[in-house]
View 1 (cartoon, rainbow, N blue to C red):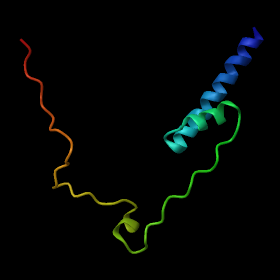
View 2 (cartoon, rainbow, N blue to C red):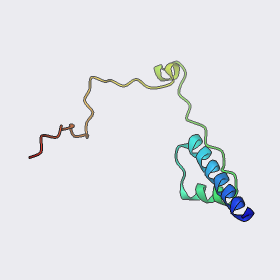
View 3 (cartoon, one colour):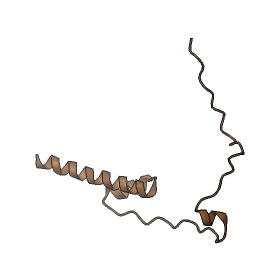
View 4 (cartoon, rainbow, N blue to C red):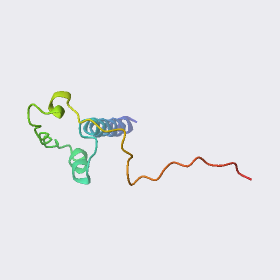
Length: 84
């Protein structure tokens, strides 16, 4: 019975490691999952690209989106009609 508990605890530990990695990275590829399953440590994430100082993006931390322009490539949403 203790073996079952140990196996379950090991799987919970792996699930927690995967969950934490997903929170940090948002996605994991098969190689990263393999590293976690084997008990390894994932390499650090690359630094985000630097935004030139003095730009609007650098000041706000995000870029502004012109909401007046329609989004292209996405079909309009059609409300379903009554079924007969």
